[in-house]
Image (cartoon, rainbow, N blue to C red; front, side, top):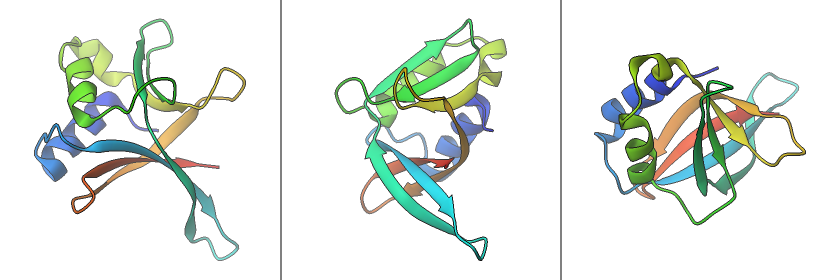
Amino acid sequence: MKYIIDMIDDIRENIQNSKEYTLLAMLLKEDEEKNFQNAGEKVITSIEIDHDAKKLLLGFLGADASTKELLECVNSLDMKAMMYEVVVKISDEHPLMSIVGFGENKEERAYTFFVMT
């Protein structure tokens, strides 16, 4: 489980708050030898704060989102909201998926949120 504050720190440290990165969700699957395998990835297209559930929802409902929209969304939050969980919302029919880690690909300018199956 990762929180908004974890994500902000990671973006600052690893991509120096660049606003030009595409956002990706990558589904990881653990194989029999306990190694993680990429089970698929998708571009994140929506960012929403759910104050009632205390979650930052990353989803696939709009146009492509970037670190610019993500940072604009979270930079105006108060300190309590920094402890909201970051999750991926596939659809209303699927359970929310907790983020287990972050990563970046500087060549492709992609910032990745890792989720588990």
